[in-house]
Amino acid sequence: MPNLIQLARSNKSLTLILLIALISAIIGLIISQQQRNPPVPEYLNTIGGNFTVISADGNVSLSDFANDIVLIYFGYAHCPDVCPMALTQIGNAMHSLPESLQKHMHGIFISLDPRRDTPVSLSDYAHFFGPNIIGTTADADTLSQIAYSWRVDYAVPDAAADSHYTVEHSNFIYLVNKQGRVVSLFDERTQAKEIADAMALWFNTNE
Image (tube, rainbow, N blue to C red; front, side, top):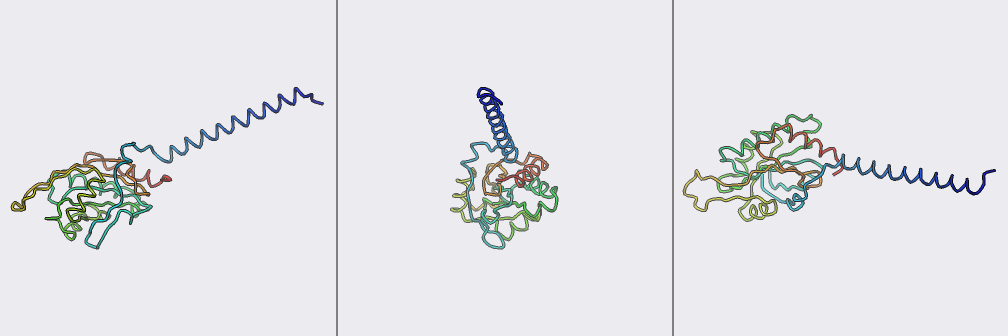
């Protein structure tokens, strides 16, 4: 019959084993969670927010796409270079994904030039780059508010006499997760595959 010392040692060993198992389980859970939810740069926590813009089919809000992945780009249809390059990458990224994922991927192109870009003309322009890309705009005040929340720098000339003016604007592609949170930034130089991989990754995470 085991004595008290042996029982105490046995209980200590069992407790130690259970403690190690518990710690291992917690570490495994943390690692698993990190793998499912990629890290998001802290500065992105201050960027974004819901908005409502106008498309050819009516109002479009970011919240309309809850549980899907959205790429957002601010520019204008008369842009000679970076805008079509960025939209091409967005369209190529979406097209490269399996059809089962494509229906959960959306692009929103927001024109900062409502003086020249109408919702109807923007619809044709955006769809040229991909069927899942929506062309939108809004009035100047609404665009200013959205731009502030999304940290978009832009400048539209005051004078409308010259119809060939350019709009200076920052050049980011915003990746928005299923909860409407900005989780990554790209630009027109980012390869479509990198964007597509990020979209698929975030669609398959818990966030």
